[in-house]
Length: 337
Image (cartoon, rainbow, N blue to C red; front, side):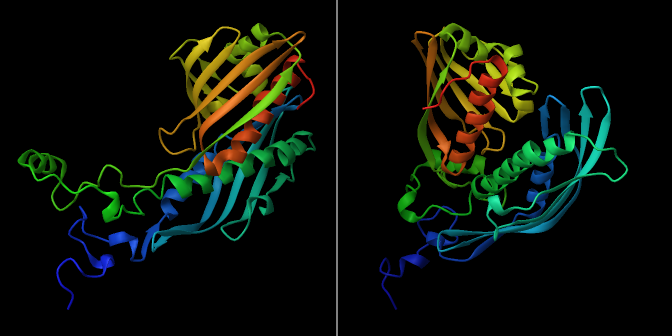
């Protein structure tokens, strides 16, 4: 028998606040089916796209069938999910005529890459032909792929919190003081333990930069980002914003949220920015610097604190829904570099 303090560290529990699953050695499993079903419905409902022909929106999510779970073995998380989705989309032409169709996603699964995801979009048989079907099959399918990809990212970040528990080396030993004991008693309900402050999964983040050139002046480009009507024009969606330091904004029908932390008129915009599918209260810091280049304005965007799993989505989102949309809407088109 090993002497006290010389045993296998996998089974040493006296330094753990909760004395369970030391060093994450044991297999644990969490059922994510109900959470995933609710999350998928909330992500799909209200999804919308628009062009010169009209607008389309997901108005009903009729079928969300499948399962999802997360397993932790030796500190490694293993994800399983498999879903079949059916939804209804409604299109409204510029003249006010309404059309209905269906969306079928048969293979949202951990075994398939997101680019291999089948998204079948059809117009109901009793409906007359409309260009809005093509809109849904192109931009609509792209948005659906982005949203379903965000579900996977959300499953791997926020829902996993607490599954990988801190090891003895990662948690400071409890203070041996009466005040600490009293504090613990006020925080612990009968039969439960309060997790250490650093319990949970830290979100890996990244930083990157993007550059664009716009055929306009810095004051005009600055105004595009801070004028509510202009933001709604280039995003083709509802938006609300307060164009002041500390002012909050909500764009793309609530899919993007944030706050302006620094505004230097015609020169710089710094903001806290997030997709609404990111882990709760996690924001990236984005800095936009405008430089006058004679008849052009050079914009340099610096991104910090973006979840590593969301880098590509964030890049594509800014490229498509900010930079390209601004150029197309206001005629500021210029070469990319």
